[in-house]
Length: 387
Image (tube, rainbow, N blue to C red; front, side, top):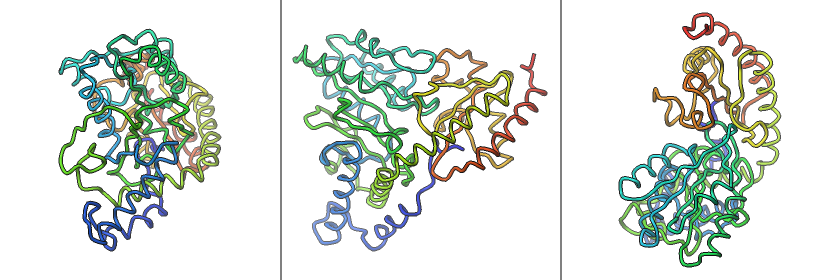
């Protein structure tokens, strides 16, 4: 029940990857047949990833992770366009790699505006419009939140930025979205949504860890943050991880074929889980939007109990869940996402994220609905917060 943290690699993906470890092992920059064989696989993979988001193959830059892609997007745009402006807009519920990149850019002289969100975690497009200034060069709002699952109004925000660019043609505002959690789960069209840069990740789509990608629209002015031999159109130097990229592409192919059917299945299971938890456990509350959320995400907070304690107790019973983003699970600080939607620290500490996936079955939901109420009841009995 923690597919949002990472997914198992689909056996079909493993099969596609295997030849590229020992048989088709060439370096994509080599001119001989081994290298050209690997290069061909790389370009075929680029086409597959591009097709799933409506992009051109040459607009896909492969990276090692969503974190690297987000860092490249924010820092690359900031430094390439700082003569035109130094103002960046982000939402307060971004992944830590966007939050921390923005903080670092502030230390380098950039100005960062952090938007507010409502109780469901939605960014108001009108707030984006109000925040835009003459020196704004980048807006970064994630497509779907990794903790609460809320899907943001990306298309509406994209229209606002496009209109602003038409009205002020002297200064270009780029629009970036982190789609690591949504890519492969719900439809994305970078052209319809007016997206200039988009981050995607392999290991969230049943592909291997160690591969990610950044969509960079043609004509975008961006600087690399890794310099070297000029791989990936000069934007990401480093020997290409061909096996992982081939796996990422195969995972994307599967998502493209099975997305609608899988989303329908997961939405049904998700709704059963949410309804059951809210009915069976008093003092339980759903975090995130009740409808505009990822098909596999359910996030709650429970009165009078700590989420970390629930995680540990459920683990002993064979259920893996999390109390927030996997990347910040070791932090003792309350989730910045939950604080941003208006939860008090003690409420945020009582949060629990359950995320479903390709191999989740109804019997798994039934088991959680049988066990979780008992765990919460037991923890409340011994909790210092029960009064």
